[in-house]
Image (cartoon, rainbow, N blue to C red):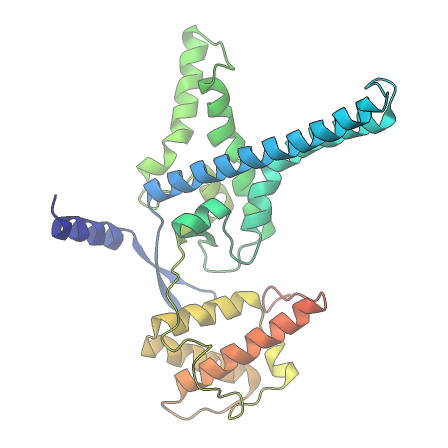
Length: 297
């Protein structure tokens, strides 16, 4: 296949995965659902990273344990060694769930594997990704990934009708993303999430080099306090896409919220200034331990 045909095929695939997300504010934002191949690759990367991390920590625990044994202690007699063993078991239990929960609950809403391939988790209703959503989609991972892996590695020795039923049950979950257009896992359906492409393109006028308009648009703390991190992310996507109708809608929503009047044609200039001010406000608060996830927080 020529480079031209390969590029055309990739574009056709991306167009099939194009969706429009309507946010709770009524904004229509285009996005692209992550491909099945990218999601599988991200999961494999995450499992490798998780496995390497677990091995490294267990080696560290082992080294500490052998060091204590050299002093003359025995595993049965030393409460320190017993405590170390409990910590190792607790670490194994928490790492399987904690890895995915920690990163997907973060501001990027993506594990290291997803970030490498350019994906992130998002709420299908356009709202903020909540802890309940992330918890639900990851608890389902036992049925979708870890249990199938256990059987594939020979952990289950089922045969006959029960073995066939088990295989069909596992196959349904493993192949679930193949049979729906949004490549949703069962966990995504339960949680109300999906995995979308996280575009790394810079803003048309990068905020670091764009004209400093914060002197022209001065915002009071009370005006900046009405929004949080979720609204900042929505505003950033609107600025990236640079669609006049979206810029106008967002500018009208913000000015209506904070009681400003804005002249026609000033929407992007105003939004760039508000974005810079809001981001600085949120980052400043985070340094003092205050975090505002959205306007409802």
